[in-house]
Length: 299
Ligand SMILES: [Zn+2]
Picture 1: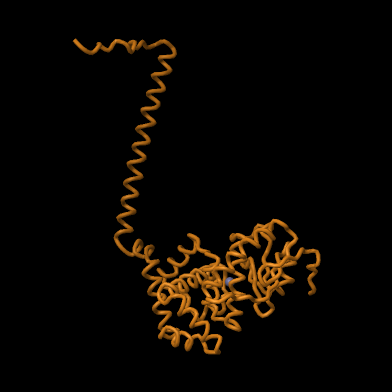
Picture 2: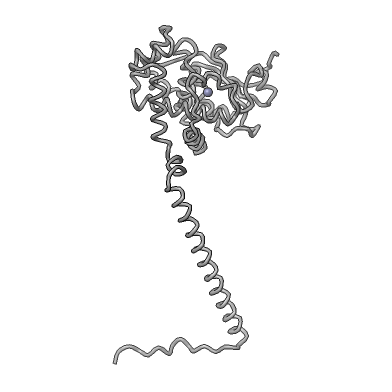
């Protein structure tokens, strides 16, 4: 289907073109883009200037036609690196949990990484890098990852290749996992090793060989190491449920709740006694001593 984007105003953003009818979105995107581009350049180590067209789709049907209807339901934005096209659903549709700035940074990071590697990078690396650039990390991601870790449901990195086929819940685990794995990579091996991996991928080596040459471990070894790091960092939930800590905490909470309820009951009783006393006072049924009967100090 041919999409008419002629009404959408066009402006240059970096090495690309932004199409949006909204002046507000154009301003917001320009600001977020500048930050994302700086971060991407610093992580990749060289200025990357891919050509791209960024569309803000104002309706669901415009989004579908610009993306060829290939986006999963949970997708708020789609990048087609081979076409150099980024399509973002307008925040006005109210389906976005993420800000326009986060979406732009995330999608631009994909375009830049594909450009740097000269083709599609491994999906776990691609998504983790994009999340890092967009600094996307929410409490829900923590819970999703901690729960998946607890129930041994972390997704093997090779399976993340088909993330678009996952349901929304699994996709959330996959994305959180990518973020944690790529963060682990940077913490453990640094940006210089990341650049070596990119260079190896650009030279046409597969991810297994690229990792071996850059950091000395293959995919399996790296996954074991990354999952161990996730377990160390996200096992708080596990420690809580597995051990007596959970039951002690539960018992503590129950006792605290019981005490709080008693205190509340007592306070209510005191308040109603006080109220009753005030009522009787107001009716003149009680006489209280004037307050100035305290004996004076000093003798
Ligand atoms: Zn992505």
